[in-house]
Each structure stands twice: as structure tokens, then as C-alpha cells.
Image 1 (cartoon, helix red, strand yellow):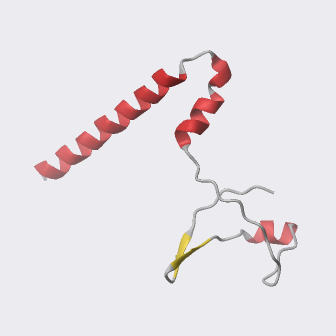
Image 2 (image 1 turned 180 degrees about the vertical axis):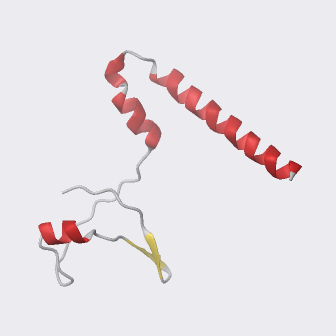
Length: 83
């Protein structure tokens, strides 16, 4: 089974929470051993993977997203400096 979750601070470490419904469905208890594969999600790769068969140029889409992020960041800094 595959789930997407965010790690949470647990003392000096990070912990992964398994939702109760998933734990019950998979019969996972506190004594059970589980195997976890860690992959950091990259939203740009996911978007470009979805658009792969659309005929759109993935590089142009990535560049446009990056430019929008830069513009948003500049606006944020301008707003902070004006305040």
C-alpha cells in the first residue's frame, strides 16, 4: 500500500505517522515490523509526468512555473520591505 505523508518532529528525530485506517486495514500494530521506502516528492516532476502525453513542451511549462514562483517571491519581499 502506498500513502503520502509528512514527517513530524519527534524529539531530535523525525517520525512518520501511519493513519489509523491504514494501520487497521493492513493489521499493523506497535510490535509489527514495516518496510518504508523513502522518496521525496517533486511536484514539478509529477506535473510534467502528467502532461507528458498532452503534447505540451515540458521545459516551457517548468520555466513558466519557475518564473511565477520568482515573481511571487519578489512581491512577498516588496510587501515586507514596504511594511
